[in-house]
Length: 216
Image 1 (tube, helix red, strand yellow):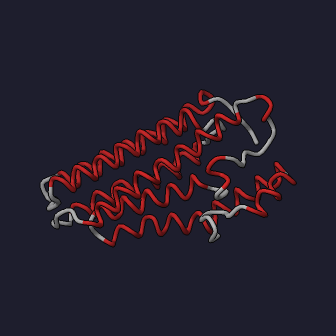
Image 2: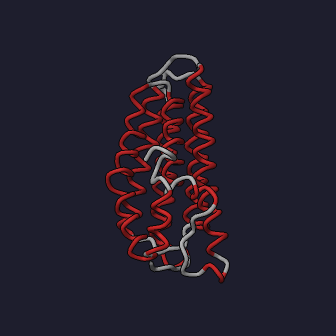
């Protein structure tokens, strides 16, 4: 696994961050704009969720992710994030209903998912920074419960984001995301981890769920 400092991928990281900022701006324009029928409370909640996610992307991109990032990866992930922001803003702009219990559930899922994603990455980064752990696989903290808590965190937070829009239509976003994790991202990453860590990965995989604790 190639590891490098953020500076070696400054261009791609800027593309990824810029795409998220552009998406958040698009969401704000749609949900706060003249054609929106969303209540002010829902509109500003959607804007807040987009802004918080952008801030998380900045932390992930420049602090927790130390590996090399390519322009292809930045364009793919950044483009998908831009679509997510704009979709959430567009869908919420069509909903005139007041906030309800689903909104509260959405806030809880968004906060919990954001914590799970960011905290798991920070745990791993702190462990990896110790010289005695060099070359070893991190299997502690939230990674005891499932092999990809960061992916689960993203799924939960975007499910919460979808709930806050007030429309079931927005659930297509976390559904697509979950399918991508299950059928593409997780199998590919597991193969890379197995090739790199060998027996360490096999022992961990034998007792740890991939994505949803105690389920799969």
